[in-house]
Length: 90
Image 1 (spheres, rainbow, N blue to C red):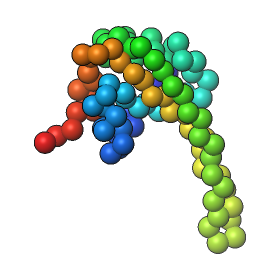
Image 2 (image 1 turned 180 degrees about the vertical axis):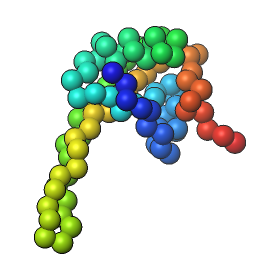
Image 3 (image 1 turned 90 degrees about the horizontal axis):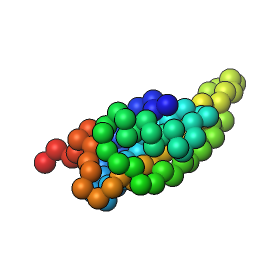
């Protein structure tokens, strides 16, 4: 279900308000994403937002191709729960 966390400047800032971003499988429904996060990190999920990103068309000289489509899930946790993976080192 969950492929990997997306660790970027924006996702670390969202971590301060209990929102965490993951790259998920294309066919993953919101309910199963929430269950996977709860089981893996032992936290309580309150909301899941999903973003479908289509692959861009790219060219290199005469060759054309397409980048892979992706799906991101932004997971909101219950107040007080945290995922240590996203903590910013100070």
